[in-house]
Image 1 (cartoon, rainbow, N blue to C red):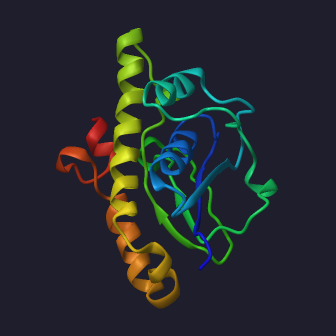
Image 2 (spheres, rainbow, N blue to C red):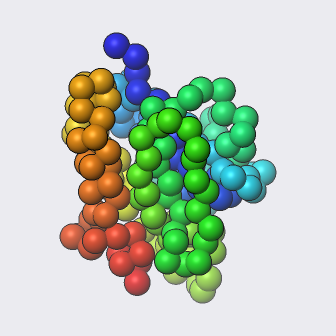
Length: 174
């Protein structure tokens, strides 16, 4: 069986999608492989994202901001992580992959004290990690082959969940 390829997609590919890529690859134990990209890549990974991943024990070597039009693999699943509630334009993947929206507020746009900005990064990470842990509970490989519609529904449902029972990333941050 082929290892499922998961693409986390956002606009800038400097924070949320990078956090998700590193977290899934770190937790999946080879059962899935994640990559990330942006429709308008920032050209750099936000230093606070790298620092947070390092604190969480995930490797950061090789993480970089990349464009979705240069992806070498065709993903099985595309998860958008941009925040529609913030008026952000979320990229639309036109390929044949299963798609779901896992919106999370962009911590790169956080303002305030250093403590408040770090809290925004931590909140985005916790929401993404929670959803990734729910994804890892699913038999993704088998569902891709035998029940893609059921997997699609599960992905959408996961994207509406957050730690503490909030129904979406935007709700969890407000």
